[in-house]
Image (cartoon, rainbow, N blue to C red; front, side, top):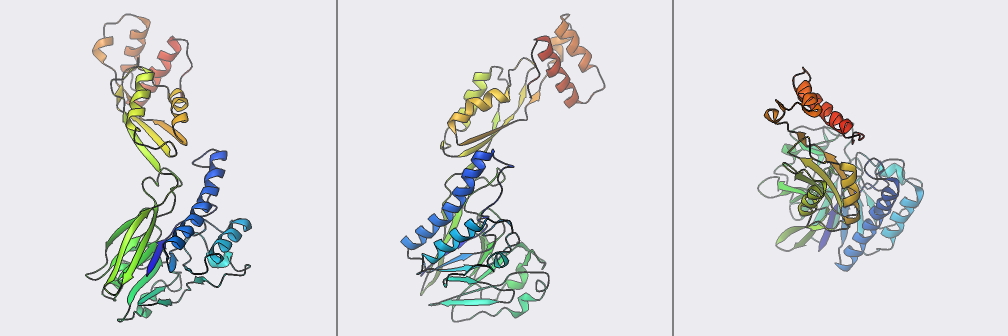
Length: 357
């Protein structure tokens, strides 16, 4: 039997803080379409149940149309049960109160709720302020079944509303602890017999969610259970540092950036961070580089963290206006960062240019 473990889909999440409005709207729809595509994958693989370990929706401000599309997609997959556990963001059960739910959508409650399929028992509970301390005491597993337990929160040595106390789940006959909350795939031992696993999210939404995103495919037989992470994102996000030390021409810097991102598909999103030390003469223009990189990828963001390097000996006896100005700034009591900013502004002024921001 096959089971999918997914989590943290965050439908209707606002993406305007990371993307311009048009791209944010496109990603909004792509997120929903990826959920539907995962269901198509589940049908093709003859998956029996899909565990949604929290945060299917991003908040209570979810569009009615989004909820209806989700419920319609679930209803159309009649051969698959969808086991949905509310997360700390979505308050999903309250969102669904005004809708007729498909028979194959099953909701976990704030007490342990179990569903049995062949030799597998799936048990989960929604953590809340009232139950988070003593919920572990009432957990019952079946020694004759492969036990999966579903929770949403941060693994910890303590119990809390958003904390999962791992020590209290050890040696409880749990083969697989299906978790939601962290947005990157992570699997580690729970005890000698079982593991805990964060499936991560289906799609990265910001540059703090780089790398492969997807879900976990579980397969059970008479011998036990195996799990496999399935990369599934339509677009990946990449955070790429580019050392531009010693480079002084803008096209050479652009070539260095292209080289650093040579293996990144054009459909992906890229955040470049310019690093290293550059001379006052270096032509570092993030706005120009932004325009140069934009045609190459779905979305590009550039952050200039390069540092100004001044060879004091070069300017110590330079009697030009530029040399005099640089010596004056270097001899001031300003911080290194302030000196760099003053020199960059001053050199731009001497060239008759506006300071590049």
